[in-house]
Length: 125
Image 1 (tube, rainbow, N blue to C red):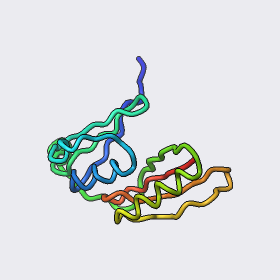
Image 2 (spheres, helix red, strand yellow):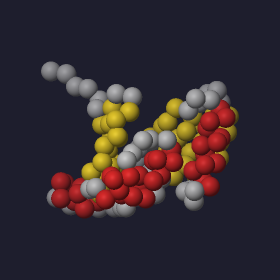
Image 3 (tube, one colour):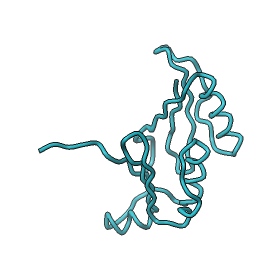
Image 4 (cartoon, helix red, strand yellow):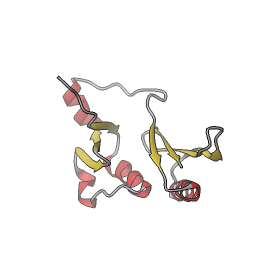
């Protein structure tokens, strides 16, 4: 018996706000998905899924709003300049920058933003 990593699911308060953020990040998500309760985006051999809190409450039999940082989503950018430009683009659209881009000791350019649901999103090259 084997397994294959296939999907990451994100629980969202407001589907449109969440999808707008990930569109700015660069994911191709059709506008018609804004009112859906479940959305999936295929990228690089796996799926990134978005579910409304109500949907998750129905699936899990309940939902408690989590507190604190639990998981990191990290997006590989083409180069250092792309990290900086993407960070600026996201924050110019009113989303929170958690940590401005810097040159990390592990020799990557790294910046961290926050999606509308408080998830930390790393950008690196």
